[in-house]
Each structure stands twice: as C-alpha cells, then as structure tokens.
Image 1 (tube, rainbow, N blue to C red):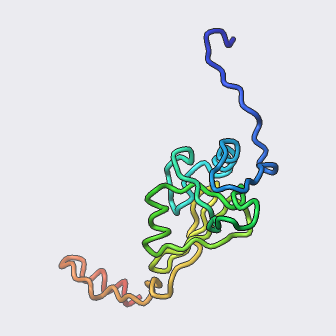
Image 2: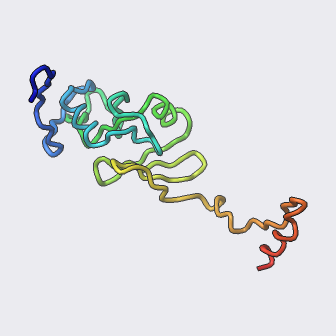
Image 3: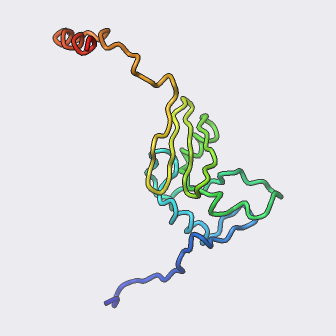
Length: 153
C-alpha cells in the first residue's frame, strides 16, 4: 500500500515526558511536544500554526538561573507580532495552573483564556459594561420612533 510513498518515521510524543533542558535553545523533540500540545499561536484568537511561531518562555529565561527553565510547562508558541505585543504594547500574560492554557490581559483590560481548544473571553473591564448606554440619542430619521419605543420599554 505504501509503494511509491515517502514515509517519515518519528518517535511518539509523550507530553508527560517531554524532557526539560538547561539551555535557552529548544531541542526539536521539545519543540514538537509544545506544538502538539498547542497547535496554534497562544495569543488571543491566534490562527498561526505553532510550527511557524517562536516558542516563548512563559517565565523569562535567566542565564545561569535554575536548571530546567526550558520545559514544556514554560514554553508556548507565539507569532512574532504577538511576541512584540506582549513585550512592547502592554499585553500581559499570566501564569495559569494548567499547562497549555494561557491567561492574557489586553492593555484596555479585557481578559482571555487561550488553550488548545481556542480562545475564551473571561473578563472585561467595568468601563466595557454597555448597559448604561441610552439608545435614544441615536437619531436615524425613520427609526427614531422605534428607538424611543425600545428605550421606553
């Protein structure tokens, strides 16, 4: 059945046994494990495939620091753009107790949980509560009466 096909045999990736390393550089085996756990960029609503992303250290790597800083628990795929937003534009990434999930807060205060299953908005700032808006200030000639009726109800 495989005659004429090109087949690549690779070891099975066990996410529970991905070895941590003491250096900053990420070995291919560890990179494959991180990409298997998070197949897409872990920035909110990220769509870039993990294989084309940089792997970001959740806790910054410290040269000469403790051993095993480069591990599956401390790495996540981030596009270059997302990496810049994290470091230069006020986005914050907080530690999350479950490996593979990432808690983000935008500069305007919105919060997101991003994991292998996608992005979920988990919080919004008080100013974003739009229930206080009075729609009667909107004047669309033909629709004004309808909007007044809605506002009154």
